[in-house]
Length: 182
Ligand code: PRP
Image (cartoon, rainbow, N blue to C red; front, side, top):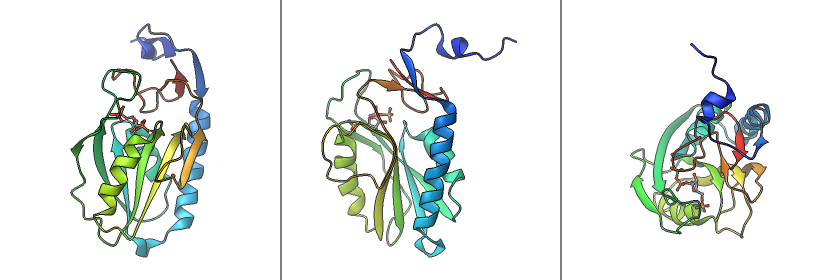
């Protein structure tokens, strides 16, 4: 069986450059987990809500770096389809079944680009009565001021099309352990 090299992972497709390496990502996610651990205690009944699909790897690594009891649920929203530019349209395909009432909720997002997703999703979650509602985003492009600024941000992201570590282009590249530009 051939070794899983970068080339086999890419299936012959070309990336421009690696923007955040696997080591950078791992280190930063651990730091974020530790920062979050210091911000809550067990009485907060922490609920970590992953915004799918893009956050699946970040969420999996982040919750393992949080040293508190917590629950995990998901939210599925889609806006881009196979396009590189956000349409501004947002479809909620799955809303969490877990009650948010009285809990400390953290929404985990892979990337904040235009901010449309968070601006649309957070008011819907706020209506469900969480005790607190915060956002933890791995990447933030800081394109415009948001109604809801993330409390935790992993990296300020360059204004390039990024893939890997959950981020896709037409569903490709999500599985890469690093973040690259296309
Ligand atoms: C991407 C990304 C964020 C959102 C950010 O999701 O994962 O959730 O767009 O963009 P915005 O700040 O401009 O709204 P996408 O809708 O592509 O779905 P995916 O997570 O399934 O890839």
